[in-house]
Structure formats: C-alpha cells, structure tokens
Image (cartoon, rainbow, N blue to C red; front, side, top):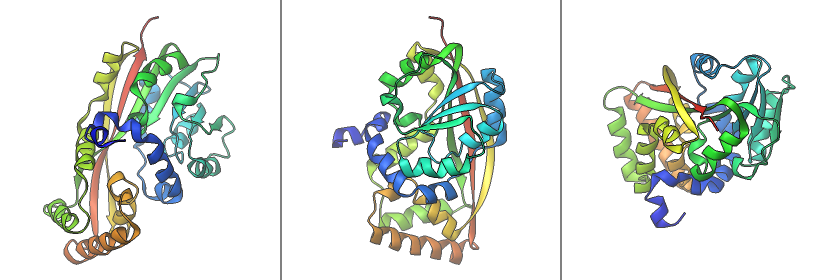
Length: 276
C-alpha cells in the first residue's frame, strides 16, 4: 500500500499479500498464542445459518485451523482456502482425523467457484483482508439460495487491570511507537459493524449478530508472544521487538504481578443471501 492507502483502514485488504507472508512466517507462534472463539459462537453460527452435519462450508483464510477445528467437530464438510503454506500445514496436522476438511492454497479472490454450491461461507478474522468488490458477490455466487455468509471477529474489551493499558502505551511510545496507520486500523477493526456492509452490499441481508465474552490470563511472556502475531509488532525489526519484549516483561512481572487478564468477545455476524 502507498501512504494514502495506509491512512485509510477500510482498505486493509490491499496489504493482504504482505500480511499473509508475515503470518506464514510465524505460523506455529500464531497457532499457539492466538485465541480461539467461544463454543457458543459456533453454536450460534450453526443455528442461525440453519446448518447441520454433512453441510458444506467454504472457509476464507483458514489459517492454522483455529475456527476450522470446532466447525469440523460439529460434523461439517469444509473447503479451506489458505494461501500460507506453513499456516495450512499446521492446520492439516490438527485436522487430519476429519476427511471432510480439505485445503486449497489460494486466496478467495483467486479461487474458482465450483459448480456445486456451498451452504455457507465463513471468514474468521479474515474478512477485512478480502477485496469487498469481490468478497460479497463471490460469496453470493459460492452459496446456495438461502445460504449464509458468516463473519467472525475478536473484539478486545479490556487488557489488564486499571493503569496497565496506559503504562503499556507509554512504554511503547518510548521504544517502538505504532504508526498512525496502525492505530487507525486498530480502532476501525474494534468498532466496525460488518452487518452494515452486508446490508449495503445488496448480496446479503444481515440476519443476526451475537457476541460472547471470554477472558484469558496471560503471563508476561505469553502476552509478548501473542502481541508479536499482530500488525504493529510485525513492522518492528528483530532488535526493536527484543527491546520491547524485555520492557513489557519487566512491566508485567514488576508492576502487575506477573500476569494480566485480556478480556475479549467472539463476535459473529450472519447474513443470508438475498433472492436472485
């Protein structure tokens, strides 16, 4: 992306190829430390979309299978689209016992829609990497009449006890401040309501949004590790990440008892394909 693009968080998808390479380079770290989603999120998805065992999903940006595995456990057949070869390798190993799960090394935009329609398209923390001019019409072309587009995101509610977030921002500002584009993108992803995009597309009508809370207690080293799987830290040099990690660990161990709670929500948006 050029400078003008970076200032506009609504077109994060233009950096999808770069982000895919960076995710792929840390596939095992990503799988170990990125959070999953509450079981209730997948129960909602099945119920709202009217799915059952044997139904077929197409998953956009399946990554290391963090959302794929709970869907496979519910008896669904899944075609996983994942351009990162190392990410997909981690997912294949985890999902080897489910023969109904297959992987195709491609982005959704480059994938050829098969003649047999799917029952739903699912994107877990990946929809913002899809070109919206392609994502909605191609999703509609992928699913049967009455099929659904199911978009899942994590939403951060709070990080640490009172004072921690401010201390962390101050520390980071002195060592490796996030770019204005990173800050703007973060605010956009935390606050955007993807249901509005569904309705505006003309291809899907928003049916329901659900949110389920969960909290993880992270040690200092775990907090650093998961932070390294997100955009702002991925821009840092190895030396900058090392210095930041040392400072964050010292902060959490020295000032906040060695661990912090990160409260999040699994947010699900379901849209149903509009009539042809």
